[in-house]
Amino acid sequence: MVADIYYDHYLAANWKLFSGVELEVFADNFYKLTDNYSNLIPARTANMLIYMRQQNWLVNYANFTGLQRVFNGMSNRVSFENNMKNAVADLQLYYEPIEKEFMEFFKELKDFVTEKAQEQKMETNGL
Image 1 (cartoon, rainbow, N blue to C red):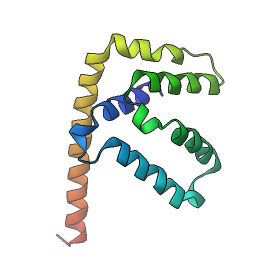
Image 2 (cartoon, helix red, strand yellow):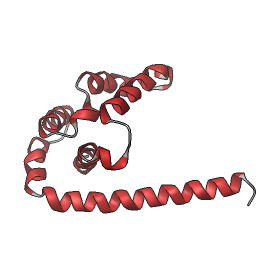
Image 3 (tube, helix red, strand yellow):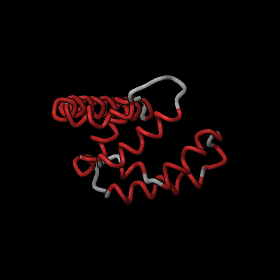
Image 4 (cartoon, one colour):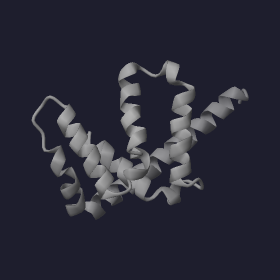
């Protein structure tokens, strides 16, 4: 869970490297999209989306204050003992090596998706 949120942070913090659409605009469009398809969203996820929108998680993942709020909430919701409240301090301590790992992973992810999209296009065109 923590690593996933770390990667969300690096994606948000470096958003301009990955998209020509401002993060705030992307987030707003995402929240509107969830409204349009609310009948397909499970109740538990719909409840989480309320907080996600109110606290604008997608944008606030980019800053440490927003991350801390997310980790505090997660820590309080899980039933097991955890140290999630310390996750931001740990991230700050190892920021650069984790960011390097994220950037390598994200490049591989983009390459994989591009390859699969090309394969799908070729299959669709009967090649």
